[in-house]
Length: 250
Image 1 (cartoon, rainbow, N blue to C red):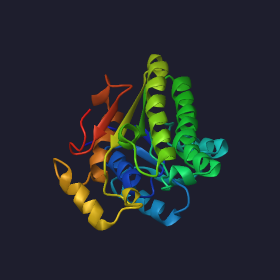
Image 2 (spheres, one colour):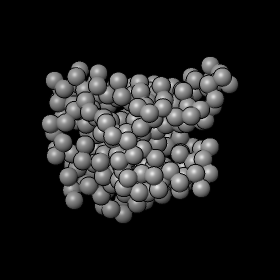
Image 3 (cartoon, one colour):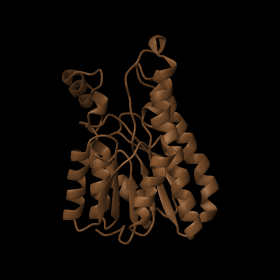
């Protein structure tokens, strides 16, 4: 499958989990890939190696997406491949904190990565796409928590709800430039993230209650991200697509 042939994709938080799966899937679909990571250079190098094994151009770039200079450096890496066509805003943090114990620093730390980061990356990418006159796609990784909430996660829930709003607003503004913006809202996924505060028994019990049974896999989300970035989704913009095995219906 080469539905992204000739395209250049930037994937944030791509050193592990869903981000790594999306970077690999984009490479397998023919895209050149910029693998963003914060602090795990070895893991990012492993993702790059897998992308290159699929025949893709790939490079790992250390960048804090909440810092404008780092974001500019990230986009400059995509320029080396011909310029960004696809941005996947995946990087996120979720430190479980009870609301009554939550500090301003707790709040700001999560909103900085989960909402400020996607804003900075989307702005930098969209400006490049618009200036080059190229159609593009932005895929934001939201969360089912934005619609259902999550214990000890007011900051996370607010950030992901904000990302859904950002998706809609930017989809309208960027449509005249041929830039589509959509979001994916995974439910309980088989990554390290949902294990914060949950035991393996609790995860197994929750997975058994999902109508299609089991957890959503990173590869499930990656397949959807590739579709949304491809020409097959050319009439889809401003949407948040849920992927949760029927755990909740919208």
